[in-house]
Length: 263
Image 1: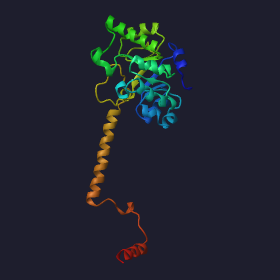
Image 2: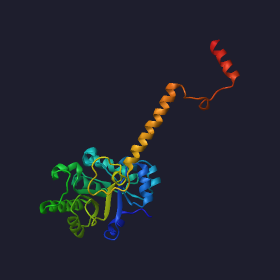
Image 3: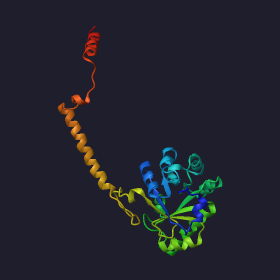
Image 4: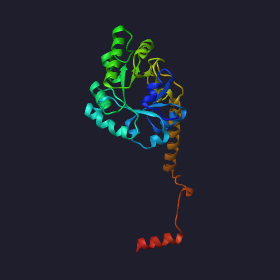
């Protein structure tokens, strides 16, 4: 599978549904790539790790972090340039329109964020759907328009009623990444923690769980405890290290060494 470009994503809107995952480890990245996931959200540090492109050579990768972890416009530019140089295909930006514009002006593909933005949820009433009223649906549209005008090519549209997303998709030129916002998005986005069943907290309504890694992690933790307990008991009782775990010198070497020490 060839590595998608921004041109490809925009050209394929409505023709192909892209799968997208947030991956936090190289093992998850490799598994997602082998599984056929095309779009990745990744920690910035992963882009800087040469092993990422070894395990996911043709994934379209968006590094991202919350705006308050990065800073203002100049901070975003300093953050984004090395990532783009090292193979990022675009960057996620939940910062200001000024920041989106500055990144875009430098030719860096930008993905904005509308709807439920966890880092800004206080403005929309907390962790709940955004766009269920006419006024809030208008605001989601206005945000999409503003991001497009600022130069973003994509937006993550999160927890917006699917009918509102569908109406927006008919009118916008943006590539819509749906997280709980319905099938009219041009990509469907979930977190690996939810897909793998690693999330031991509240699972979002939109998240479909495909495995139960939490139970497997708990089982492995019990195995860790049992193995480490047996090791500690062996040490305390003198059973470890037994002769088969030791290396030694010839007897005459040991005797000569003792003589030298005592000399």
